[in-house]
Amino acid sequence: MASEDSIWIFGYASLIWKPNIEYLQKKRGKVRGYMRRFWQESTDHRGVPGAPGRVATLVKSEGGEVWGYAFEISGNTKKKVFADLAVREKCGYELVGVSFYSESGEEIKAQCYMGTENNPEFLSYEEIQHTAEVITKSSGHSGTNREYLEKLVVAVKEVFPEENDEYLNALSEMVREMV
Image (cartoon, rainbow, N blue to C red):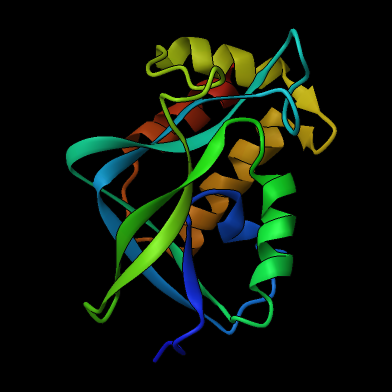
């Protein structure tokens, strides 16, 4: 049970394999009405200005669902966690309220960092072939874009085997074939 002054953060990409935040507990589960796409440019972590990489975001999708973790952040650490996430989730991400459904069926109101149409780094749509081409050659101060994709694919398969993210799997396969 969450404490009154805590908040929940939903992570669907790098927060799965590298949370690096202080949390009280984490729960496996999903959000509904979204799909994971690499339609957010990254000039800060997995690319550079003039040659942006691609990172995951959530986009609305009727009938879609994305598995991830909800992290409960205590009132005592919220300020530090949000300061850390402001650096990590910069470059167009904003907090959006979502309903998270834990494995047990519990609904939790959570916040989620998403690239939205309100920022210039959001692509709104990109052919998967082009996304794969960008990922194969992009790199930034946090590492290669391929590393980001590979770590996400491995984490999703290991931690959320019930999720069959066809887009993520197809993107990963295209990148492997190109390299």
